[in-house]
Amino acid sequence: MRHRLPRHQSSLSHLKRGGSHFITTINQFISRCRCDVPRQYEHLNTTGSYHVTHASAAAANIPVPVPMSLRPPLHEVRLKELIDIKEGFYSQLKNIGNSYEVIDNGPNMADLKRELSWILEDVVAESKEDDINRQWRKCRWQNVEAEHQFGACRDDLLIRLRVDLDELQEIWRRRIELREPFQYLLASAHWREYVLSVSQGVLIPRPETEIFPDLVRKALQENSHLACKPWADLGTGSGVIAISTATELRKYNQDAAMVYAVDISPIPLAHAQYNAELAGVSSHIRFALGSWDVPLRAAGLQGQLGGLLSNPPYIPRAQMSGLQQEVQSHEPHLALDGGDGPGLDALQVICKAAVDLLAQGGLIALETAGEEQAKEVRDILMNLTERSTASESKSADVSSKAVSSSVEAKLHISSNLEVERGVFTNVKILKDCFAVPRFVTAHRS
Image 1 (cartoon, one colour):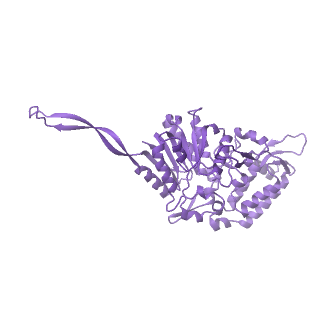
Image 2 (cartoon, one colour; image 1 turned 90 degrees about the horizontal axis):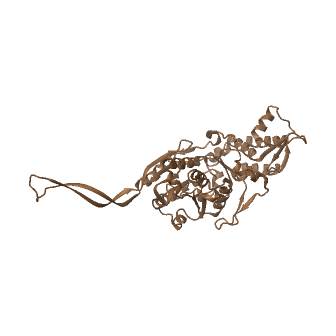
Image 3 (cartoon, helix red, strand yellow; image 1 turned 90 degrees about the vertical axis):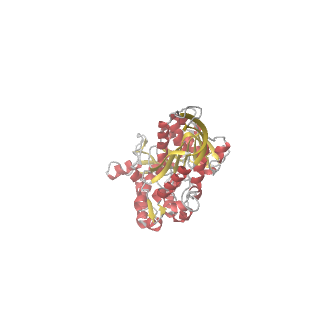
């Protein structure tokens, strides 16, 4: 398994704040963690297909690119050629410096160097000495580069790449000139143990969101019966929340685990289907095209869900223009724009939908912009109420005229009363991996 960088290295995500507003930096939205290609993906390395087409009604005929790290290595170069190109890229970075960070809180030079190393990690696949008797061996770029720096390998070492050098240079040109997210350029996002296909039209998964499997796991540990019920991921995007949830549910309910993945756009839905196939859980996810809770209600799932999860759009519309270019120009606004005012449009819909959809004890877990918005979502959940009929017992002291005046009889009177109670219990705000209070969780009473 390829060692993942510590979170503070794999993503320098943080919020830069001014007054009551925030500008989300490049590292908040463009980040990833590195991992080796899991076993379930290895068979794809032998195929030459770079796109797949789904036959489902929701995602029919939408091409989905195979992630760079899963493509076959078809191009041979000398190590010296690759080193020279990398040094040329470094020279370009010196000219750029930290200008993107100054302009719109985008990536600084150190961030871009880190991204370049990740690009080369995905592109470089195998190496061997220039000897017909030598065998190709899988390799990591950072190891090859380190060995070269210490003189442990020669300039004429043969390297197999997943793209040719012209394509590699075009990827880098688009990254620094057009400021396209490198995840789109590689069609790859690395999230926990998963390798995901992403392209324009699909929100890039963030490391903050990696808490969702932990929340699901904790809920199942406390109430394993929730694994016997369907769960839902609203606004599924790349599908990673639904995929990781299905993985957790299968630990308790191997055959019948089921997650509904809902998205209003067929483009992310197609990617989610493909990513579920890569992860080996596609038979445990039902993909539905529609707006938020509408497909779930149509499926008759009222009161049935064991969990309702979502990372919905939550950026206030007035702040969309302040996003860095990588996000502003390339990522889908539909997945980011939370509406006018505090950006609660989608969050309010989901909170209210959970009232009808969750079974007793069911979990709702929502990602927010953090801080004040998280408090607002917490308050929404805490203030949702419902009327119910409860049997209450009262003891009334009654002086009985049928008995001696010195004798007081206690009559136990039972009556059915209609009372108002809170819909959710145990409402909490949880911190993300960067210590930002971001996630709101609760359970259906």
